[in-house]
Image: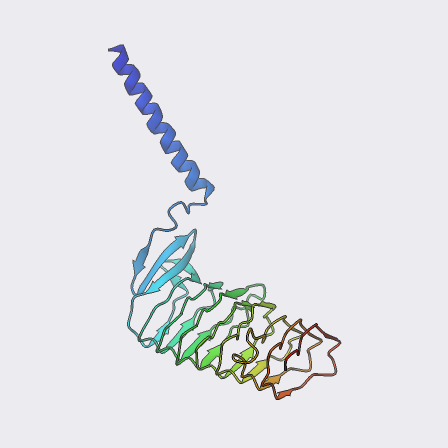
Length: 253
């Protein structure tokens, strides 16, 4: 009898200990211990990270898609994956802080991308590498005024021929590499620093078809290898306000 009571007591203590560990894990993770659990609301599949939604897929078949700024009462903060064969335009809310690598990759019908501005001047948006790669019909992209980072080969194998880069962009990783269609790059009024490698090409004889670059009078510096490999560059205006041009900025032009 005593042995049975001892066994039961030990079993209860083990259960309590396991429960304590689970609770401690949830508390330590800020409630995100089950963050990878996927949910579905309407046309959206998503996971949770605290009070934020990470979209993991689009399940609808609409042509003009307007992504909501909240799902199930929680803020949409990241687009991890968004696959659609019917979507021709996508409107991205001003709550999104991150567009992951290859998020919209191979959305073959996509033609227009619009990112909305967040009024908070400290709000920053990061766009991962190859985010729109393979979107063959994509021609129009409007960045938000909050974009601070552009990953590599964003528009590989798209139809984007002209782009306006907001003054908020501070860092990048050769975002227009392998974008064969791009011929015109315009930097927004108020831009002071042209980021390193912003129009840099990996293969100077194949990938860069940029012919025209427009810089505003506010520019004071041009970063390292900013236009490296732009072998087809025909026109660029360098304002008198420029006091620094980084190494290799116009090499192989």
